[in-house]
Image 1 (cartoon, rainbow over the protein chains, first blue to last red):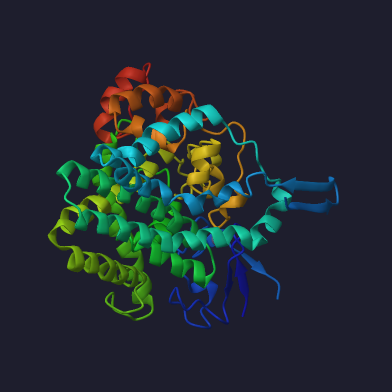
Image 2 (cartoon, rainbow over the protein chains, first blue to last red):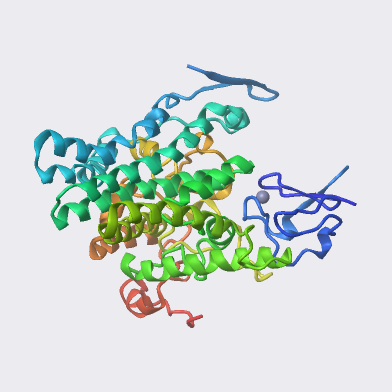
Length: 55
Length: 399
Ligand SMILES: [Zn+2]
């Protein structure tokens, strides 16, 4: 499982954890997020802007 | 006064003292302004005194912006993390939240228990509405933050003017779509504020609900679930405003209607002037270019920025929406408004004067330089704007 980071505001999408508030259950693959996904915190970075971080 | 400093590998020691640190305490005293009219009424016995707060907002503040001028404080980017970590600033935003409840209740009490002319009731409703408009501004500051507490406080303060859908609509709608024709919260060249109002208020409401409905659907929940962030805020509104109606009777119906409308209209006014005519270009991928500093109008006046938690440093806000107010920065060569927000609101309320001041300013921006294809234009005004400013340019097909 990997972690992806918003380059604008450092929001982390941890696949293992998902994002409960946003309705993405634990184990959600970043890849499987909708293509219109934008950063839930800042709203200005698109899915393709996110960077995978080393764990 | 507190000084922030660090040893930078290339620049050596950088330090910064926020000269405005204690001026931000102004937010503590802000409730005195809406109450000033009531105090002056008791002192003088004249209902004319009730107009003082409105005179202050719309006449005195623009003059103070003009007279006190620009804000020279600008923290170096490197020290922003230290400023962000200083909890002093965020506490000031927390304490304003209960004050919004106190002021609305106090003014409602005054209206409900005194024999007043209809004009005084209207003036007081507008006064209370302007202060609740500042509540939307506080909700805006809090709602952009990542902590649970701040997001909860945002829902609470937005309940005062019954605007609980704002944070969702703003963070996920406006910030994503700002300065595009699709955004109901970005005004277009040739669109008057009165026309914008009819697009902005319903558009924001629909988009806020759409975003929240989708989120709840992903969780397998109905929009009527108690987890609905909008409904939670509306529930507080219902208790507050229902309670005022119950205690003070029918006079609260027009009073609260005007109060709510005026608070929303403050937000409409801010939205109207913040991105007027500015347009992001579409990239080949079909996405819009990321919001750039030149996609927001700014004002760097010291006084109105203190009232508005630095909202007027708007380009940095759109570049870094989660950044706290004390660390927002001013930059050179940004689209710049000729007065602070309150002065610009008055200008916006007189459309011919607004166009006269702003249209030229808009077209002279370096990234536009007279090229109307780079301007967000009201489709109904397209013909006349091309005739007037087009110099032979052809209007693009509507779309
Ligand atoms: Zn982000």
